[in-house]
Length: 430
Ligand code: ATP
Image 1 (tube, protein in one colour):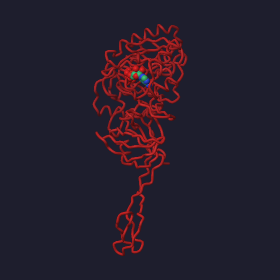
Image 2 (cartoon, helix red, strand yellow):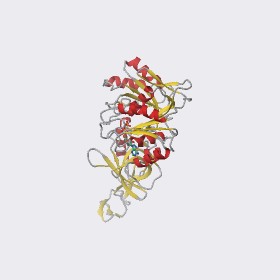
Image 3 (cartoon, helix red, strand yellow):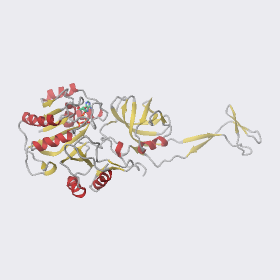
Image 4 (cartoon, protein in one colour):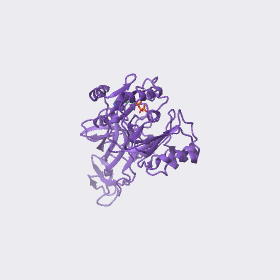
């Protein structure tokens, strides 16, 4: 049986991943494979933080499995052979009780939804929800059609995320181990955070632990949720040992942890084939630069590019180095792959790959073909030698040497969106 939830946290606290942890622990459920933390359209205006939805395939304990989490000392297991739950209504009712205890429904933006299903809906829901805007009516229609057991509060918008998380096919995935200190972790000193983040680096496959550019321990989220830290990894094999080792080495307290399979760092949100740009959607496409970057206000930078025969504007909002280097490196005529989100009629850049740099030239007065002196510009495309009065009619063009060693620009870890994958800066230079 699959269970999915979304939209339980509010701006002042809570976290839907923690609600999933409590459901698994309090109901004594065993998970097939791993619970899933599915990030949806990062541009959606209703989101509280990172637009995450949760789902898990659950049963009662079957064959002995491996430990994937713990809540207040009680282990949570994964097993390939869970015993199926017979009554979806009962599962929904018991899980919904936990959702209603934890959901921050007093927040006007919080509209929880829960779905229990015997099978996954087709992947199209996920693809739509990660790349564009899905209507609640479409989701309700699908729920009716599949006769899915569900619960919701207020306007029930969380059903969109719940159905979409269920339909994630997990063709590309990474993992995240989230460690909790419920109800909210203390503020740790910066130096301790940095040391814990560096310690996380020692676990195989982990990434985005520490943002060296901004001296920021990225594993620690902003406050007001029960999340102490989250370690992202491409290799889930030994990360489960992290919480205990962290506690032993640094004396940092935790109340629980859970390992998730995620679509983070998969670039799933980018549309590659499309007719026109739509608000709140994200795209990856090739374009030619039409203007040098220019600054308008508040330190933000913009440039115009041509795509499909039309001119558009791109914005670089990222406030630190990473993408900012692009501002000085871009020239008219550069051919780029742009990755970004279309908001307010502009593409907000998330990363850029240079396919080919334009050759750029400066125009100068020619030297006299007769005596070699520098000629002066006499107007009307005429150049005159001050020594021998010879005339010439063509200027000289000198190529400017450009630094072509850099082919890839991205936001630093602290400014990177959950879904965006990172590529090495040396990309394409071999
Ligand atoms: P939480 O931790 O509670 O999940 P969040 O930052 O992930 O917080 P939500 O509070 O879940 O964001 O708010 C996102 C809301 O937007 C949810 O109700 C979800 O169902 C809905 N939603 C997500 N993706 C889409 C989409 N593509 N189209 C329309 N609605 C969406």
